[in-house]
Structures are given as C-alpha cells and as structure tokens.
Amino acid sequence: MSTDKYDRTAAGWTARQYADSATYLRRRADLIAPGLASGDLVLDLACGDGGLGEFLLARGLGYLGVDENREMVAAAHRRLAGRARVEPADLNDFTPAAAVAATTLFRALYYVRDRDAFFRHVASYTEHKLVFDVSPRRYDVEALRDELAAAGFGRVELRPFFVPQRVALPRPVAAAARAAEGVGPLARLVLRRRFTYVVSASRS
Image (cartoon, rainbow, N blue to C red; front, top):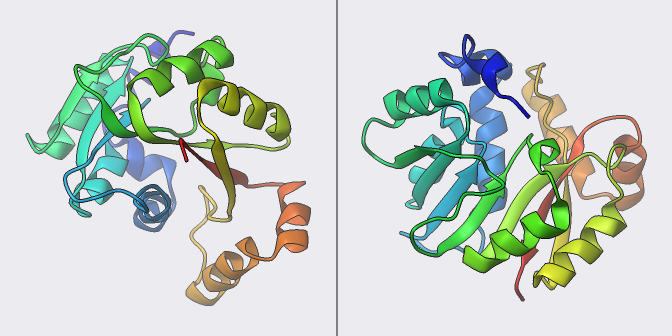
C-alpha cells in the first residue's frame, strides 16, 4: 500500500491528527510502559512523525521509529533531534539490528499484508510484547488472539481505549470515559459503536 499520500502532510502531522495530542499519546505510552525497564528499546512501526516517541523517551525508554514514508521519517528526525533513531522501511519487512523489548503498531494494522506472517516476524525480534490498537467492528478479535498465540504471544490483554482522536474532552468527561474503560459490559457496549482496544500481546 502506497504511503505517498502522506508526503504533503508529514510536517505537523501529530498536531493536526489529534485534538489533544498530549493526552492521547500519553495514554498510549501508559499502556506500553508496564513491564518494561528503563533503557528498554521500543520499536514503533508506522511511527509517523515520532509523536509517541516523545512520551516513551520521557519514561526512560529507548525508541526506534520506522515509517515507510520518507517525509514522515524526516519529520520524526526533526522532532526527536538525535534522541532516538528513525528509519525508513516497510513495517512488514523491517528487522531491527538487535532484539527489542517491545514493538508497537498504532493506527496501521491495515498495512499488514499477512497477519500470521507479520505476527511471527515480530515475535522473532521482540523479547517481551507487541502492543497495537484494533477496532472490534473491523477485525475479529478472537481470530487475532489465535493468530497471536500461534506466533508465540501466549498472553493477550485487551484494554478499551476511550480517548477520542478528533475531540478534546473536558477533564470531568475524560475522567468518566477512562473509568468506563474498566466496566466490562459498558465498555463492550461502547465499543460496538466507536473507539478501539489496545492489545498487549506478551510471551508470558
């Protein structure tokens, strides 16, 4: 799938994509960080302009961004200013030079050509966990569980993620939405209409 459509929008991508980018990306980082130690390297596939990298670096984690679009890679280099590596590559084929503690893939599962092959490939270089988001209205979550288990990710946790991309919620509403994430029946009802799961697939 071509990424050329992002050439003209790479500069300032994060600021335009999210109404409240700090809240959105901080919450992403909150769900990635558990189980990781200071200095652990996180590989962020389809990293865009590296917005998530800011919040992972702030937690003392290492960051390696990968994006197929070279304008996005250039924007990420400018944002992260030598604090992390960013490389141009297709997420389906990329293999890091050394194993990483965690791999992430956000808003980009549709770029995966063959999920079974992709999950196995990620498992070959990921020591701890793979974290990605998925819409239960678009993907069969149970099928994903089976594919992840077959690739070696034996423990799969799904966390509802009720942070809107295009709307900045007032603080009381945001707090209520976060609380609703933990109420199973209510969360499943909400997920029938909008929002996503964040999937954390680990080896144990």
